[in-house]
Length: 250
Ligand code: SF4
Ligand code: FES
Image (tube, rainbow, N blue to C red):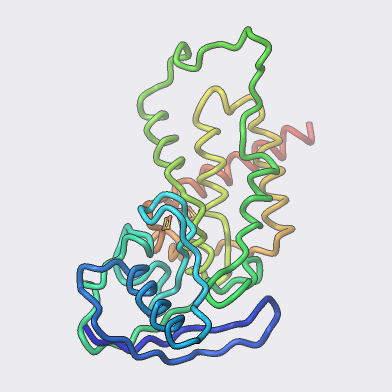
């Protein structure tokens, strides 16, 4: 395949960036999108040019690092996949492909296609965990019966990989789908109920501090989410938040 790549290049945080054009040849339709970028970078290095910085780790849809905006869509044209799971057979020979980093105030660009998603880590640190008594008297989690429906919904919410596609595809740069998945995975389980009230209040407070926008129910996040995280989680988080707010006032 012969392609024309239009890629966002930015030397560093706060620096002016621009789209640069790179023609590329010899791309197999069986290559992954990131392998195609590897080919480009090999070529750039061989020619003495600066390679394109992009984020990746697992390359199998688990870590959420490979966050790219491809032809105006988070993780590209396929559905239910991350950028690293996207294959070049989704494009046609001769195509022009636009590749940009996530665009959101709370995800500043570090370099080229790499953004700082530390805001998600700080939201998790604000409450996305359960505190476990490790005194030696800890109850085995498997000894607590959990309704199958709740366990399934908690597991579905837990499949969120923190990639940030929901933020990038939202016109308000809202992080509600991410935060609601992280609240829901614990709110649905008895182990998560103990800290449920302060968890949701603290995580939402941190989300607002980080500068993410508000949710206006457009649903773009659910469409672009590679893990199919449902908007139901946002409704659950809103219920948890209202309940926690009322309890903290009483
Ligand atoms: S909710 Fe979906 S799109 Fe958002 S961070 Fe989690 S996996 Fe990525
Ligand atoms: S590199 Fe880990 S999800 Fe893509």
